Image (tube, rainbow, N blue to C red):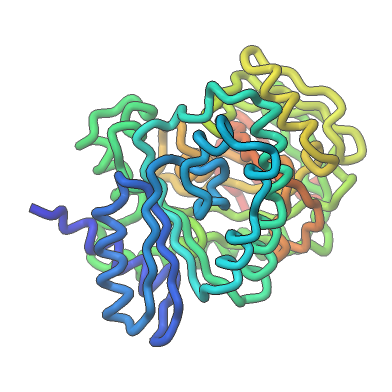
Amino acid sequence: MADPRHEKLAQVLVRYSLGLEPGDKLAVATQLGGVPLAREVYRQALRAGAHPVARVSLAASLSPLGAFDSLGEVRLREGSDEQVGFIDLDLQEMERYDAMLLVWADENTMGLSSIDPSRIAAAERMRAPVMARMMERAAAGDLRWCGTVFPTQAHAQDAGMALDAYEDFVFGAGLLDRDDPAAAWREVGVELARVAAFLGAHDEIRIEAPGTDLTYRVGGRTWIAAAGTNNFPDGEVFTGPVEGSANGTVRFTYPAIYAGNEVEDVRLAFRDGRVVEASAARGQAFLEAMLDQDPGARFLGEAAFGMNYGIGRFTRNILFDEKIGGTMHLALGQSYPQTGGTNESGLHWDMICDLRQGRVYADGEPCYAEGKFTI
């Protein structure tokens, strides 16, 4: 018997997150584990009058924003540099669709962990134009995209949960237990927009937490209230810090996970926006390889606050973990153009810091304590 939550999620994704209209061309990209949701999305897209095209991959791709490049592990292991860097077809498809849904449903989240980090870094550098074009079209309003996770045994194991419990966690985080999830997300959006407006009226942000004392500037940048359109579930406010403005140190509370690699106890020191020192208790070589992949990888592309208080645990999946209520995250690398950020890189690596024992100041005035905004 089909899980009725699959249909409910598909309706929210099609009608609310992507806002599909008659005639829209939709690309649905997933892995084998995500077929149940892809089927329901396909059905709902047809009912909305759209033209859906589904692509099912046999393996995880290198980058979440490169989900059209399937079989990423085999490509990296067997392909020549020319083959790994071949993006012509990806760029063509990036121009073809009005909307894109990425359904991450890994059967093995560690598929790239045995690949040489320098190989991953080189591939990300070569694929950077695909990510940049996607963000450019999205910022211009020419492309609507959303990424979501479909529960699989691999994701459940990463979270340390049985599959049934993990399914409840995933669907609960998306507010699918509400009678009208879309209306619930619109309500969430009101509070997020209030915080985004407050932060948008200030320039210098200072973060203090155990092992962290960091300042960055956001004057003239746009804070985005993320309420379930580009990510589902969602629940954060984010912007692109002024390039060259970050100074200080940060210690990330949770392991930083990227391309199947887990890096523990990451500590970064910034000077004039650039990472000048980077250390990790485990995964140092991978951390350095990612930071050295291109000039933009050592600069911040995003600064954000997690405000989904329905997500209260670390699950080793960035879609959920970066939204944990009472945290902040920083992304090294590529900026989102709609924030005003201009940093360019093949990297976009989110790292999370718990602020439930921290404080935040906006232009010197306290505005956040014990995991919540006090404004």
